[in-house]
Image (tube, rainbow, N blue to C red; front, side, top):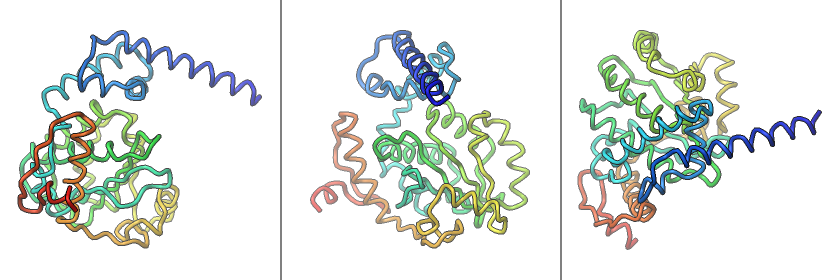
Length: 284
């Protein structure tokens, strides 16, 4: 039985490898950043997102390449979006989940601006940064969303939420391992009833509602996260203190890594509120 399973898996792997090759052949000739972006692992993610349908995966990937050529997410630098992060509404955690994946922490109750484009660029920047810093062999990350302090007044508009979901699902497929909505208030249900219709089925299955007084919820958290590392806001024993200046220092350093990865000429960024001069970072 085990031999049969191994043989079946080998056949599936062979078929998938062939699909990756076919997808690459179906794309127009690539160069520059598009060529760098379209690794075999990347092509596999797009095929997986479209249930290994070659035509649908090709269309999806071509739309992403068009979006990246105009939006240029790899060129966004921290000093451009730092003001969006002053309250720590989205940040990269200093710990990983049980599978070694990077973790993004979101605190929508700390929403501090009303700019739809600013919110989106800030999140795209942090997605690109999290991907750059994924441990070797990891393609996905986890999201922890803390609803402490959330209200309809701090909530992003429905249209902005829809645009964010569209970008994540269509331009960052198979990047999310799990999304934890921690202790959402009852009033959130009204917002969720609208937003969930924009979420595709694959992403929907990764979204988990977790409540601190629910035993099953707490056990679910333990399967994904080590409670010693998990901040107390999420039922763990760790602490979560966002230091904007320190986070800015780390992001400025990562901006240099990003520029080197994509082969871009990087000029030192002038310090803005909450950021540090990259030249200072490089000399420390």
